[in-house]
Length: 210
Ligand SMILES: Cc1cc2nc3c(=O)[nH]c(=O)nc-3n(C[C@H](O)[C@H](O)[C@H](O)COP(=O)(O)O)c2cc1C
Image (cartoon, rainbow, N blue to C red; front, side, top):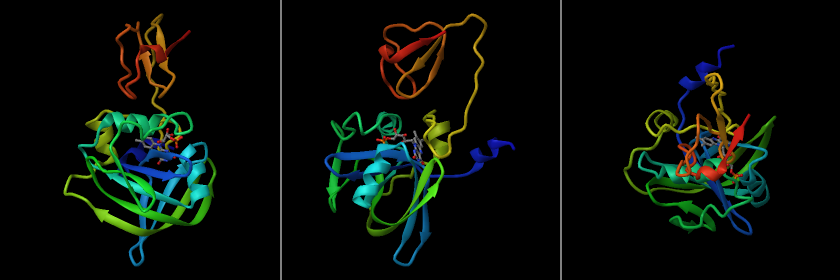
């Protein structure tokens, strides 16, 4: 089985968000429109993601459609850290629509959805939901998963549905440091001003792996 074929499948880039005691959200690429009359869509969320737990309770979520101009630091925050530990909406621009937080800066638009079914797909849950409201907010170009990987040079964490393990062998006797936020592996020594190229945290988050 050559899993590289999965890299040829096209997706968009989205932030799923919801709200119970606080606003929560995460990056996904697994959004699909299923029907057009009274539109039904699906999203696939890892069972360990905090956003999954919250939307199971609220039965409602928003989808913000990211454009190519969307801030990659916000992707790092929403795609590699957990809403259980941090407030991802602190210091970023957002708007509340129909009680749901949506990201309104450099996004193409949004959908507000209500869950109609949840299907267990082993590590993930597939949420089937009806769109109860949606808006196109501007004409920016939607970001694709390919653009995120090839232009922004981003990666996806293990919890992403489409994660593919990439192995780079270290040179003999080279030090290895691993980011405790996103798992990025750095080969060679780390300086104090080193910043993780994937999730943007500083050198204190890098642990030496011997
Ligand atoms: C490019 C990208 C795509 C992702 N796609 C998915 C996805 O489709 N489903 C999923 O469950 N997680 C996906 N993730 C991972 C979640 O965004 C990540 O696990 C996040 O930290 C979960 O946050 P939460 O605990 O606040 O819900 C993706 C992350 C990135 C960076």
